[in-house]
Length: 214
Image 1 (cartoon, rainbow, N blue to C red):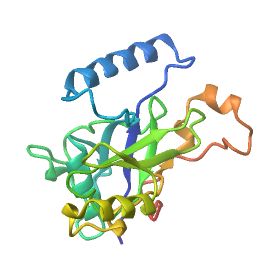
Image 2 (cartoon, helix red, strand yellow):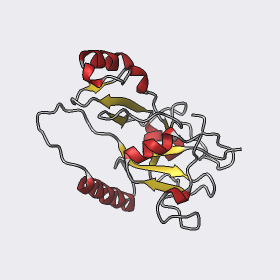
Image 3 (cartoon, rainbow, N blue to C red):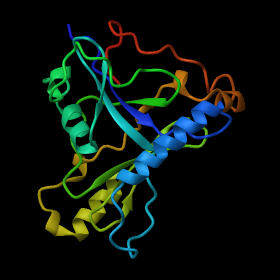
Image 4 (cartoon, one colour):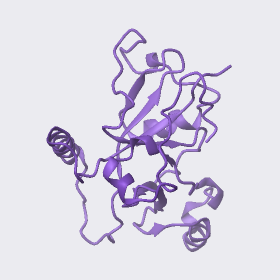
């Protein structure tokens, strides 16, 4: 029986009322992200917003340690074949189950579960996930090669109809399902602002009990 097959997206922490050391950690992480982000090549592109995703990670199906995935493209490749090809530590060059985990599942970051076996984003398009201010969910949308933001399959279908050069791509190739935010990793200050029913604490994933069928 396959053990846990979860792929989690690590969401960029908001700097609400965190302890000073967490604020410092967040500032350092943001600086690292900014230095690695590809600059825009044209100021004429419409403002499409930025994804809330900070890091991508996958859990080894054997030792259950979390491994940071280097890019969104690599993450989507792993995710798209999760049931057929479970992730193992040795899929990362020079890494084995004997090595320490790259990152630990805990509440120093907000985590969310993406759907296993979700197909890769068509070439030229970009999937964006934006965390709501109340941490209730991630809104999913796509950016077309022309820089247009689309939020539904109907909008995708209309775009493809207007741009026949993207022959071979259909609206069914896009999934707008929202990843599941792990409520036990939501900052406490957010939980206090919300109602008890909307921010009930969840148990962290259990390696041998979680099915990954989200």
